[in-house]
Image (tube, rainbow, N blue to C red; front, side, top):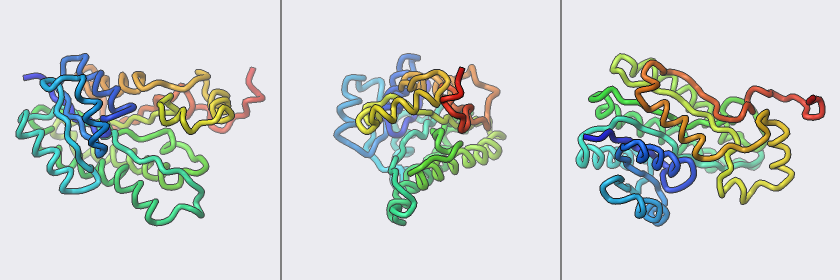
Length: 251
């Protein structure tokens, strides 16, 4: 039987790129997303034998249970879980209502917790791997990211807790923290001034792309990372390493 990966937020962006990366390596992928129309559009070209598309909301306990139940019924195994689904809702602290706060936490943090909890029974069978997608915003402070950054920092800590507790079953858990990534959504909202400012702050002087994040995710799920667990990997072109240095002082 081929290995099986489950990727949440798989209809677009990093999730779709990660799905394709697993498929390239001969895995089967369970694609999960709450946008049913976009999920169907993304999954159709990939082939019915290669993917199982599930339209569900991971922030719901019933949703998480149903996703794992369908995976177990179809394949009877799960070798990798990629908790990628997330909500990015940015705004000033004063304008972040409790409802906005909870909406971000429900998907980014609660969904990661619920999906992992439900998946443990299947991951134990073949000592699978979990990769939780956090963010550079979980490692460094920034404006307008009170809810988002806090949720992603919590995902990093949750990953450590999971790695420590699940290690005895051979389950490895790591977190990926993407820096600025050139997605369609980002390019739609980032002005040229924002793009230039990011380039100034990133040692590699560019945005990352979705495939570069997917490569790191796949590596941590693969046997090549068999002794790596409890780690947080920033895939960010060096952005986190720069702190708050002044671009004008660059050589």
